[in-house]
Image 1 (cartoon, rainbow, N blue to C red):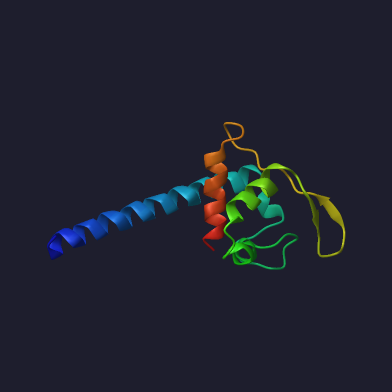
Image 2 (cartoon, rainbow, N blue to C red):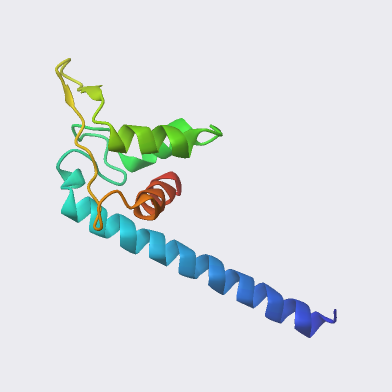
Length: 114
């Protein structure tokens, strides 16, 4: 493979990666809006009720089971503890169509990318 072919291959690979990331960002944006996630979470601000997506990404950064754990968290309404010590059930993330695992995985990939 000559240099030009290598550059073309690299460019195609980069475009594919960028396209997938944009898709995850679009999915995440839609789900966050639809499920009102920003009521408790923010991308980076840490003074919110729930952890920022950046804090969540750091928590799961080297965890091989991150996707599985976050899917469970987003689909089972676990009890969560707030900074003031109170507890409540985390809202289940609703997708359209219902229970669309690819949308949930896109949201999780987006969260973990921070």
